[in-house]
Amino acid sequence: MTFYYRTHSWSSEPQITEETKALWKHMAEKGNWRIVQLPNGFYQTEYQDLKQEDTWHDVTRRETIKGAEM
Figure 1 (cartoon, rainbow, N blue to C red):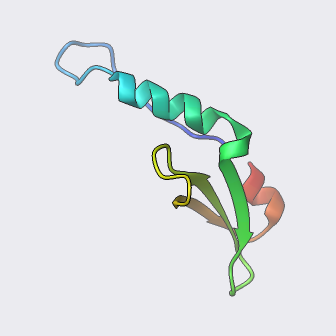
Figure 2 (figure 1 turned 120 degrees about the vertical axis):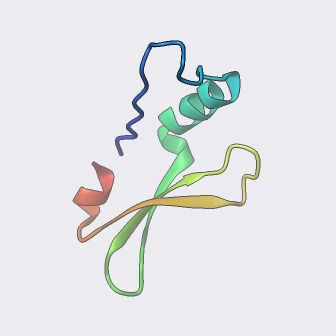
Figure 3 (figure 1 turned 180 degrees about the horizontal axis):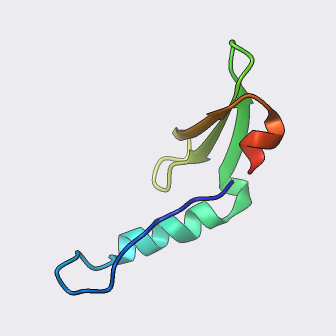
């Protein structure tokens, strides 16, 4: 799964916080992701919450498992 974030370097933009960096490191680990099949046959990619391990956040829904892995 690819997670994309875009920012600019000028000073008017909010700077990247340590909390954001921690989230990115957490999301970069494949063990914090899962793919589940929904009742409609689609696959949903989810990542585990950084603070609550029993909470998952959905990111994408795709028709194939291969599409969900990308």
